[in-house]
Image 1 (cartoon, rainbow, N blue to C red):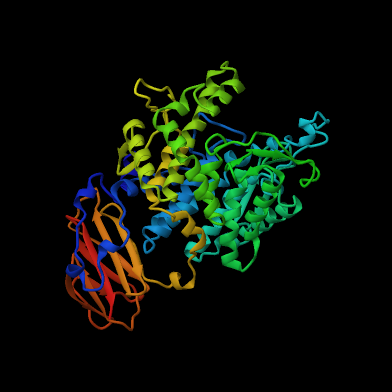
Image 2: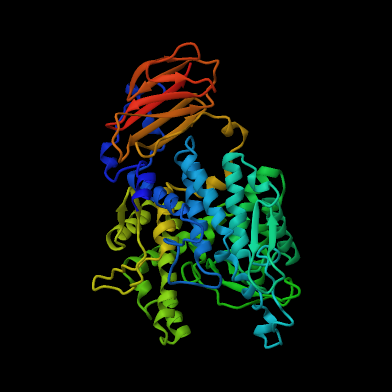
Length: 564
């Protein structure tokens, strides 16, 4: 643990919120007030550090990802994906002028999505699930032998996440690595073949594959396991299509509205009650035919449809997602905060849970109770996205009181706890890793409409050319603020002390205009002018065009570089 601590503890220390410096507009400069720009709290950076550290786990080490809940292909792919979304949200919204920890961690998480442990079960999952089987028609391994390739057909609950993460990554960084041949390579080395097989795809390959399945189904949707289409699982790619359209000028973003129209017309969604069936079944051979709802119309939490789907649906249907939230907000919040959600028989979803397992299998029931945990996480993320600060704060306070949060080596997270019993005060202390390491962090980091802006306020060439900072020694300093204001030509940076005490630290500012003069303000006081021909004691223009800034690090320091 020491090495991991040494790698990541530089980002922030647990008590830095008390150390952050306050500025007045006049103290910094008449035009630039650092308080007007996003600044991350200690807990927020603690969450980021935790995700970043887990992204560095050795290949095949799933410490921090595993859970008692193991549906279908397992929960790893969901935990990985929502960790990546949380990083993308923070990158876009909070520290847009500092990339290193976010970019590298997202890359690492996408590599984990290609690990055999994540997708190998698809070969078996692909052998069942059609409406013919439900109707009693013969469907066996001979008529539906399944397939190994996890992208080729169906499996939307896997490939939609890869598509959305990779599209957002390219939008954030202008990096087309996921368009290179074999960018996503799934290596089959198991039995039942004549040796290793490699399935290679690019971001564009996956995007076209999903959209073609939408068209082939007449916009019923792309299936999870064959013949079963979940509204929730199509949501990530429906948002990802919008980002992809921005990148390539396509028109795949019509998928979400067309799927919605199809489901409303067919009675699978009710816009008056804001209820949706969890999934429909279709013909195995023709996904546009024999479509039948397989679950009842359910409300926001009962189907987990609310928060799970809505963190994507805000990309194309914000008004509906907000109205849906308001319609069920009070009931959901009350069920969570009183423990009613976890008491068997006291809510519709818990009664259904008890009936489905007949209370005979404690391990299986514990696994399903983990679903209630990530229902808490999704509702928290939903409340944050809707800008409901009261509900968000109530839920995060509840988590901080009951989920035994841990400060460890500068990381802040809620460790897995499989005890979902309700205490005498109506509190639940059980928490799933999906909620504790991804969904609650996502909620805390979202100041309101952050995901909507991630999808619809895309970055492009103008952002890629803006000044940003790099080469931060995370052992000695952490970045709590990094924002470039193009209108004022001002770069605002706040560093805080790291766990390794040192007399001085440095960081590099890249993509400044070498033809300009910049005023450097530190902690509200002007330190001088910097240009290619005029250096400062604490700021040096390097041969590669970047600027190296050095500072003491016994306390937080805020820097403003303003072009003149």
